[in-house]
Amino acid sequence: MFTLRPSSSKDVQRNFEIWRSAVLATHGFLSGRDFHEISTLVETSYLPAAALVVAVDEADVPHGFMGTTEDTVDALFVHAESRGKGIGRLLLQSFFANRKQVMLDVNEENSSGRMFYEKMGFQVAGRSDLDDAGRPYPLLHMRWRRS
Image 1 (tube, rainbow, N blue to C red):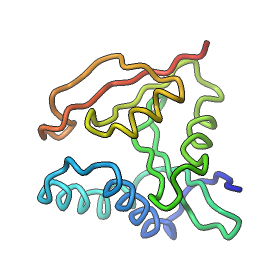
Image 2 (cartoon, rainbow, N blue to C red):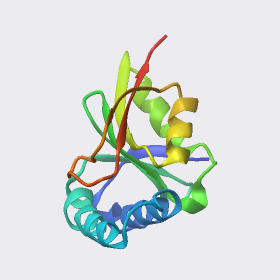
Image 3 (cartoon, helix red, strand yellow):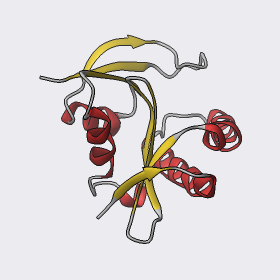
């Protein structure tokens, strides 16, 4: 069983392991150079500064995390070894609780991510040819609305 709590500085290394394993499992389309550059940014800039929610096991070990801004999911990653255990669902459902709509972007080539979000009720609301850094990785802009 997993519970949620705010991430702390002691979680940064584990969160990087979560991010790395998740990206290696789902983002085979990234070039080696881009993976290295993104990894460096995630490890040294994003994770130490981001306000994240982590899904932890009984021993308080994080297995997934989510970063958000207002009604937008900025990041949601689950350790590759922990996929299929309801962690992504737990993180998203907690975020849905007090919202009428939620937005997020997913790489178009990340088919497992897209299928997960569609299963959670998200629909494609738009598309960009490039990612946020101008790299050639198309993004799908997805929206969830409370019914």
